[in-house]
Amino acid sequence: MATIGFIGIGNMGAGMARNLVRAGHEVTVFDLDAEKAHGIEGAAVAETAEAAARGRDAIVTMLPAGPVVAQVYRGSILPHAAPGTLLIDCSTIDVETARVLAGEAGEAGFAMLDAPVSGGVAGAEAGTLAFMAGGGEAGFARAEPILNAMGAKVVHCGEAGAGQGTKICNNMMLAIQMISVAEGFALAEKLGLSPQKLFDVSSAASGQCWSLTTYCPMPGVGPTTSADNGYEPGFAAGLMHKDLGLAMAAAEASGADVAFGRAAFDAYAAMVEAGEAGVDFSGIIRGKRELS
Figure 1 (cartoon, one colour):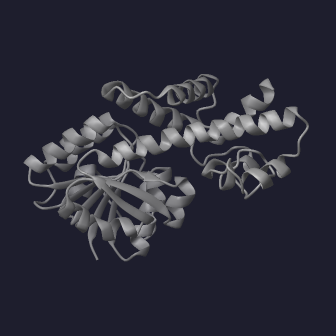
Figure 2 (cartoon, rainbow, N blue to C red; figure 1 turned 45 degrees about the horizontal axis):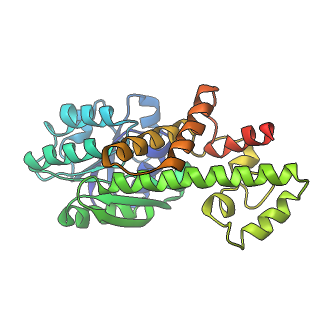
Figure 3 (tube, one colour; figure 1 turned 180 degrees about the vertical axis):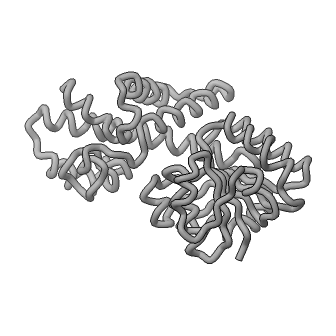
């Protein structure tokens, strides 16, 4: 078992840290909100990020944005971690920052992985997350047992930044698919069709996708989802908007044609601007139904 420092005990980080404790790892946690850190039963609580980083076999970070990750790594982790500590950043940030930090970590003698996740808060609590990892083979081999304690699927996607790149591509596809499902149900409602019958057909036909069969945005249809709980997240629209912004920046930098991705970005921007950043991203169907 490993000694692990975990920095960032938010909605996702809390469940991930708990699963590391359950797996038998010796976990020390830190969050700016001390109450959240003290909520991880079985983990030690550090008073500072530097204290969480010192003397560990591995450090896991789960932070809200690239600038925050860079600040924590440059100010608290790289100067204070023990030589040879494995660094795993599970935040969702831009590809360029992930690559730059991996380079700085390598120059300081550390192996670092960018390993963002998919699966939401429920997956974090259940230990069923999917991890998309970028970094060297040796670092990935060391990280894999730790990631397996928090997830059900771990994929090595390539060198530094590949995990972040894979995550933003995945979430762009997810956003587009969720909007397509929302519009399909809104049209069906306008035509007087049964939402349940549409689900029964499409979930077994060519319209099937995760946004329909697993996370249907229409209340009372299919498995129980956020839609059946007043669109409580889940995965908030504000976070989807952030991830789509990262995808748009990557598309601009690489010259990729992402017209439908841009439309999805604009749609979630409208949700955020309407004060619905904290609504589950599947709640985009509400606007579609109202407009219809």
